Length: 355
Image 1 (cartoon, rainbow, N blue to C red):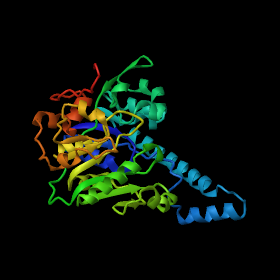
Image 2 (cartoon, rainbow, N blue to C red):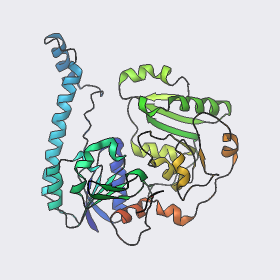
Image 3 (cartoon, rainbow, N blue to C red):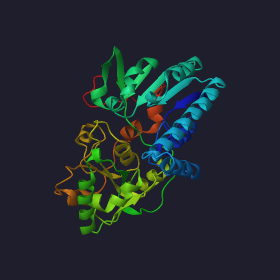
Image 4 (cartoon, rainbow, N blue to C red):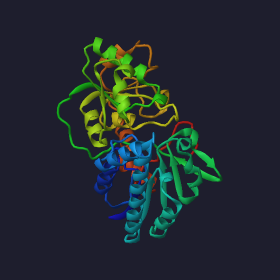
């Protein structure tokens, strides 16, 4: 088995699934993942509540919650970094795989390089411009992969190569289907999807479709505003983001997955690949999906988020099997062999990409 450093955000617990799948595909993982999220909207601990009350009452601090939680979060992040440094110093690896390498300091990146026999690989699963710090760190990696076709090419004299997200190919078999349509996501005004989701919920209700819709609000005020933001009873507010494995299991227990394009980039989210891997139909507002080799009009409906024309026919049409080689191409097993350049693997390309 090959030893591998895995360095990525702990957001939504997806790193745990990646570790499980790396193990299943023959890698021994040294986990260097950590949360760099200075989340001021989380609920304060009992100790923090006393600190906040003190700052408000005694010091007259109107931004007491922000100051207390931010300071404590930064302290936890620094402590976690020190733990990661100790872990690196005690281990060596054949490969180093980063997902969103921008969250790591250059001194940590150099320490990881000194303990890695092979190459440092980074996969940026958001558009490069969304987390712009990555432009200053591309030189720290031997290979940088991107999932937005617009990001493939030369950046500061360095070449980025194409990759995509993937579907997890070592998930347990599921039982009975529990919903017709599934969607979960975070509420963020810039995503501009609330109207479309409400419109689809109204359509689904009128057609007698069983839905499983949940919106994660990052602060209490968002939960209070939920009935105004998403005025439909089948769209449920949640106070904590779903663990990625639970999210994935809910998707696997649905017939159809709903997907909304992020306006910040043209890259494919995980949903199209989950639909492919688990043989689900997909309704998406990302027109780029039609450019990929797994696209089939019986399986994927490109929706404008407004008109409902064609949805009835699409939902009634049976799922069409996709070429097994294409399905395998976007599996985690092929993905990890591709990004580490291990044989055998199928090359992953992006539409309009020359690489």
